[in-house]
Picture 1 (tube, rainbow, N blue to C red):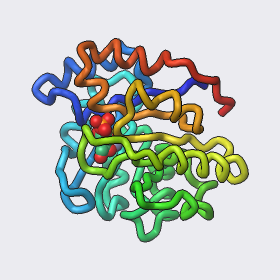
Picture 2: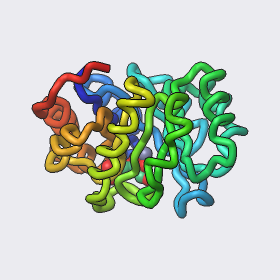
Picture 3: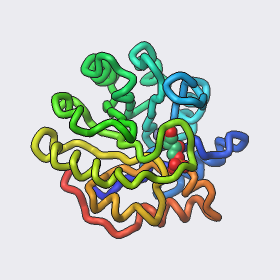
Length: 223
Ligand code: DX5
Ligand code: ZN
């Protein structure tokens, strides 16, 4: 597979959401990245079920739902019903991560685990075989438009080594401050899925930026 691009609708124009969804539908993007924030796990509130259901009604590509919320288990079934294809919970928000991942799989979705910038990838060692995707936060979660944290490369390299032994099919997603300037180095480090909000939606042509990100030179992954 080639690397995947997941535009974050957090950076879309909510007054023209259908227009922006249709732009993504007709672009080279692979997934819709949907950021849910509760004002408790992160110091910001984004949106909930009505918006996700509206996105799902118009979107022709999978919804990649990133839950920045405490106690996600109680809502997993509803996010699945709202149209999520991938549900990602934060390692830091789950006391019983194995149970959370089971609930996501039971709901028929792929299961992701997100790590804050300070959380070492090594903490996932015993749960890695149960995870479909690890989302490495390359900014502190809660806001779009922040500066990319350079230690992300190191985390991807270490996770890639772990995954080679424990879960060769694991997808590695990077979220925060991704742009045309760091994408190739992130691919080279071993990441597969790239979330991009402000670099896409603040571009003169968001559709062309998606196509530029998608068509950056990269190897073809075997997973
Ligand atoms: C931040 C969110 C990101 C955000 C990325 O908490 O998880 O998905 O939308 O936005 P940019 O690409 O602007 O950093
Ligand atoms: Zn996100």
